[in-house]
Image (cartoon, rainbow, N blue to C red; front, side):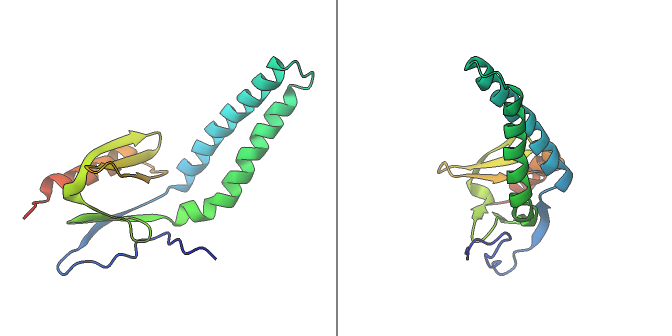
Length: 148
């Protein structure tokens, strides 16, 4: 049995309050996997064509099957992940806790928002329906946070 928690387990500090939560969006999850499946299908067919295999179409079937199986088995875990933004920290699954003052950069990668700390740690908030809004909300909290 895994000890991984999909939601934050870090205790809030006295006076700390959750401002908002970020969860994965099911439609975005399946859209991202559809794009991944299309790429895997094309790659599989391309490899078989380059190898001279007369059954190039099987690369499409294999690519689609691989991504579909992964999407099916991982969906419940990915949909349960939650990140909480407090007035002091970004709290992730389990004990992931990133003080707002330690955030160096907030990037977007596809439908994900990547948090990079001054020490180089990276965290992903995956499958965000509106990645720009997620990024803006974290940036606003960081800008409004005082270090003392």
